[in-house]
Length: 484
Ligand code: CS2
Image (cartoon, rainbow, N blue to C red; front, side, top):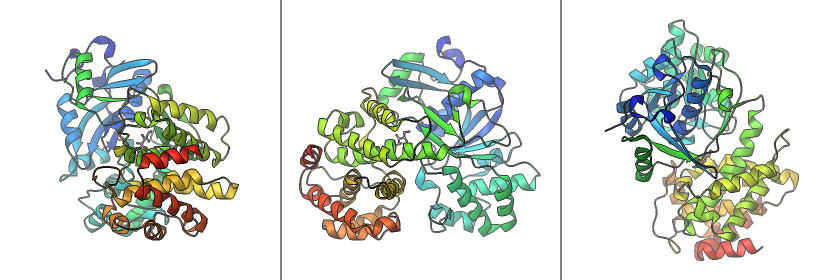
């Protein structure tokens, strides 16, 4: 029997409130495992602690898989959290329903424009927005942005959906919702605000001015390592709750959410669920992006080519684990001082989280979308490292490993797919080329900031490391590097 109602669930695993007694106040775009493990889980705790009409309508933007799993279960799913303290499972009641907007954006738009909706939150991944990061605007060449600029009344992409829903609210005389970006982007609220305002300006300047004046875009730092669910996850959930749950997920016990407190239409009592409200989200974001995500990207490229399927395998390989710690230390040194935060302690905690034997987080999954990730994870750290006179070896090593991944070389691994929104361009510049040709071409791309592109010493080191990685097995390169 499939999970459809809380009556089927052992009492100890049920939410601490009656979900039916609470209305929807949040529409969430990007209904993936991360949203379920993070914002939905914390909203669930906030509902139990303080109530309110804050349940979530989940919207998948592209594939109906997530909504097909959740809708028949009335939004219910099992969350299995695993850490050193053991396993903790509970059924989450915060998601009221799930829909897919691909092909038919009307239900999602109607929900976003409904009076009861106070927040639209997003976890759509970096590549889905269509940002022009340098100009703090939108990228009109991004496929979804181009399609939505041509046909704004029937949007497919994130900027188009937000803008059309805000247009409808303004026309109906309703206050706007707060837009809460929960993707791993630096100053994510500021970036998304710039993109929406620019997008709207191209179709309706008065609407754009209203958005700029009236809509809040708080920035957030989100953190919980959440791999894709596997058949083992579903089997474990079934054993725990006693019925079939096709939407179950597993995650680590650790969970962090730092949020700028700018919600003019109100918000759930997320602080009761452990969220931190602060005026200085940027500092937390920078620390997380450079330390956790930066070392994640490095270990994903290096680990994948050294035969490490999961992050925990990377940490089980002593020389590779040393390189992860080196990266964490180097990234920590680039950060400004944050009162109350100890980057050294954060690094120790991160290494432990990466070691978690219960979490099967694939290096190949993290290796995806490097062109969208490397700028804020690695390249932005280099500017501060140079300004502070810090050794950049950890960053040149990470950059070379990314370039090696782009090369598609198979001397130390089987053929693999390059998964990146710019895969065509990146393959063309890297496949079958020598290290110096790849580096020369990479330096000219838009992903590399101008100051870094001009840093000859940096790229000389990348070229040497890349030449080694293109001819030698990655394991040998790691052994030599870790011995330095
Ligand atoms: C990872 C992140 O896939 C990736 O790129 O670095 O998803 C990471 O697991 C999360 O940001 C952790 O909060």
